[in-house]
Length: 271
Image (cartoon, rainbow, N blue to C red; front, side, top):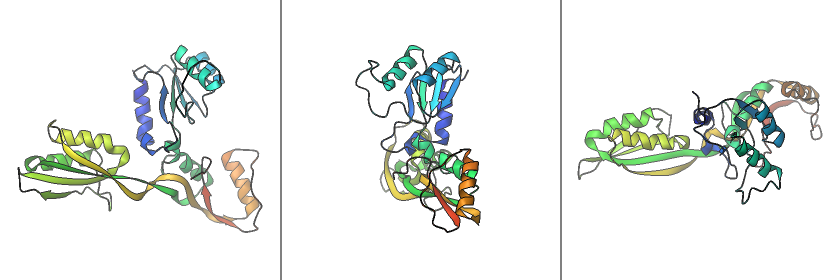
């Protein structure tokens, strides 16, 4: 039996909610995470028509790109389509899950990566990388330091330089304590704290987590890459229309220069 939380956990392993922008509201917005999945409907926006289609097709989970609720609702009276969608979803036991800027900001499997793949871009990189790393420092008994270190690395801890398994330990004079320091992606924080406690056989750990301001090249907005060969502007526009399967595009004035390096963004690009 697959529950809603099972599927959302899988989606969040690809695009962790911690990667979303501060204004966003990605995640489970409506519904019971413990409910069994009967059917899934995917969409760009959770409109009233989408909810009606989910009811007709007996889907009790809607996965949307854009969140139906960005800010808190003060009332549910049906006075606008957002309130009506939420009311209908609750009435028919339909869950609504949004995977938005967290999916935009993932390097390898996100929205921008898919667009770059369709355009055939190589040597891709994040256009505006985000600070996404943290450091965990913990005081642990010297006798448990190796067990804790192994548990942390199994949960995704890494060194700041190369991603290899590395930590820094400095023995303290009193109580035979050792200070361990490891670096990790912010998306792994919950797993790291749980691993720390497991390594201590369930004892309450003493630890500190600080944010590292260095940008992470694997998380951020937009993407840039190079075409296999330079293309004339008109040829590139035709290639773009074909790759994105659209009959019409809008563009600025042509510059009369070949296109070789392409920057793209799957959203509005306000970053």
